[in-house]
Amino acid sequence: MSNAELPHTPSAVVPLNPLGPAANSDRHVVNGPAVDMRGIFEMAFQKGASDIHLTENAPPTLRIDGSLGPMSLPPLTRKETKLLIYTLLNDRQKAQFERELELDFSIDVQNLGRFRVNVHMQRGSVEAAFRLVPKRIRSLQELGLPLIVSELARKPNGLVLITGPTGVGKTTTLAAMVDQINHQQRLHIISIEDPIEYVHENHLSIIKQREVYSDTKSFANALTRSLRQDPNVIIVGEMRDLETISTTLTAAETGHLVLATLHTPDAAQTIDRIIDIFPPYQQEEVKIQLADCLQAVVSQQLLPRADGPGRVLAYEIMIGTSAIRNLIREHATEQVQTSLQTGSQYGMCTMDSCIKSLYDQKMISYETAISRMKNPSEITPAPQALLKKFPWPHR
Image (cartoon, rainbow, N blue to C red; front, side, top):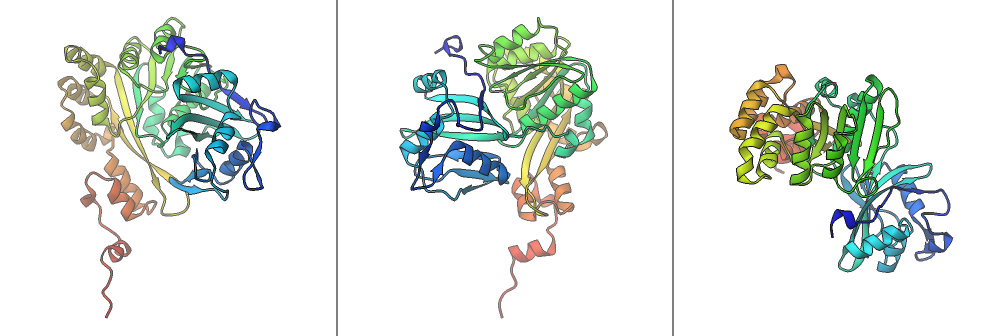
């Protein structure tokens, strides 16, 4: 089915009571105590969870500080899982899900916050994953990002990419950059998202947030049209296919600042991914296009803290210097790591150097550090870490 045939799925607002678009008849009982989505959401917020998973034959499960753990509730049956999820869907969303067997949307839970929701099938069971989206947008400094990222948000044009696997805070970093622009500059910002997660209010800037399938048919279509809407800054929630990547590059080279996310683990693989997604006959042109417009790549990981609860951000930063631009034109990405290591005066750093710094500050454990570094031999374990690795023999 083409995007044009998909029905709109606007973000929903889940009121205090009853839950979802359905009335109290959609509340149900599991082995006695009432369980509903409102109660699950409240517990997730109270425990500081980042995600909720509803799956058959398991209690609702929370991800807290990167680790999964079941809630103190009985396992859900197939029928109960579907009932819980369907309380959040309107008739149009139910019809779309039953036709496509996939559904992405966001909801605003009254007096709590927002969630990004993915509904899917698993061995015939309706299941869902929820990502919590805090209402307050934290600053770049609060997130633990260096000042160079604030400077990137002040660039007048070009492409800035925030990369990393799922669940490492790419959207949060993007929202912090937008919030900084919004409070410091008088600009027109157009954000294209699927779905909308953080909700921005106008301050000095005007912000238009467009949701794919609700406000526009596709990322690529919205990007093309946005160039006629007098933007200064364009936000691309995810560069997920060739058409979106191509249109993003065009927007970035036409005098706009474009901020976007990509699911790549580091700067070198980001360059490769963008070039390699194009057919061979286009790649030479794309290398030149990317080299000319790329301002920076910020790659992220979230690591469990050793000095308390929670996770800490580790990052790699590549700045579009003349040396980096030459490497992109030559597609010599194997040399990018060396440029990052020698480019600290431009604000560049490798992921390994950031992880080593976090370890030296005792913010992460030795085991965490060596499991995430490309070259773990660069750090020396503390005595207690050595004892764990080589325990003293019993006499």
